[in-house]
Length: 75
Image 1 (cartoon, helix red, strand yellow):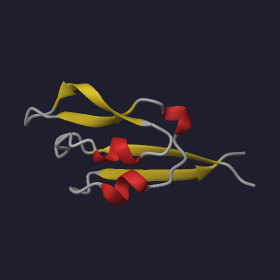
Image 2: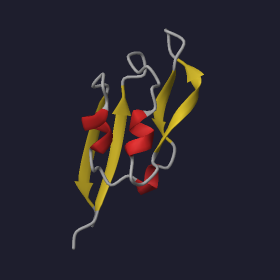
Image 3: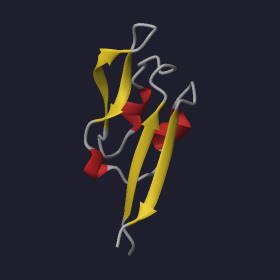
């Protein structure tokens, strides 16, 4: 069975830091940054990059559509 490696890109200026993506992530890849964006919100970041499979659950659940998910086959 092929393994997949994933990555997410969050538009940090549009993220409200609601945390829904963190709660839905099956691999606990997402956390909240200690930094804040221009609106004063902590934003989502990848905290466990090696565990992301690119399942896209976070991108689908994000109410603001600020998460882009990338997925590639591992060799």
